[in-house]
Length: 450
Ligand SMILES: [Mn+2]
Image (cartoon, rainbow, N blue to C red):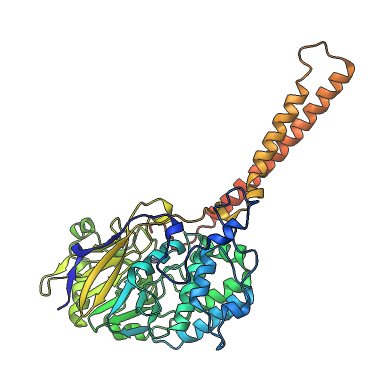
């Protein structure tokens, strides 16, 4: 029986992004570029590459993307040409499409939970878990949304997949769908950095992602959890996965379900599955449901992601017969949404030994809401200041008797001020209406939890 040792966790302390990956060839900070840009207000902050990478830099002679070049280019804030992005996504999709619904894997392997567009934390993950060009990795989905670097995360992972199709494994998360990426920010990010065709190509690729993995014939790895419609691992193989995930049924549950909390178990001791109120779809599954599934399928445990954890992981109740946690939850997005202040973790499985490794978040470039540029963002403040200036000018003659010219000037100033105010009000109103529209467009099921 495998052994798990959560106390042997290893922490990487918070560091500045400038120190990232200094041990990793190809990722070193190139200070020479900074020194050649004396006109920058903050010369120590490098300007992002002004041009997309050349095709010859993106692909090698065999037409395969070069992950280490992409990795550095993305870290510097660069983008690719849309046609190169589409080529990367499509060649990864053609590999994924041939994989079974349930991957069959053996250790040594490092299992990672949600990444959610946190590209700079993904760099720490690889620093901690080992160079992805030599280490076997299984990602449990949720690469996109929430964070502002989902295209970088996904393109880098897909380029790793193309480079090492039998060592980098990517499962589907509930966010890898049209529904959530339109509600959250991945679609907007694609349109901001690339175009609609790139977004559609991503979605077609996500439709090809496998749903689960069987590790060492001992662990079932999925993004969400179990389903009342899935009695055996073979049932997962029967699912038609090449589609937008439905809002109910086996495929939905694999991506969306959560383990039951202790209070829910106490309130409904006989229930195997209850409606998942928090998610608005799928189920919460009880310890008894997991235990039954594990016994029926001769497994030791479920490894899943999908829920933020303060420590980056959570071990659920042990099965008496095996002394092993029924469910292990791994979450790999530290300081989730830049607000949770949680640690992240990865799970290393080596020679049937399990080890949790934790890491903290690192700094990342600040991105304005809705990928707004600084000029658009600052317009209301500019108008506000213009209003102040007009108001100051119109009141400058207050200390002396008003002449005919003064009164005309005051009247004109007043008109100008009113016009400026109207423009400011219009801009704010337009933004508020835009925000309201996107909120009222709230889909079901909602992903309001994590
Ligand atoms: Mn999720």
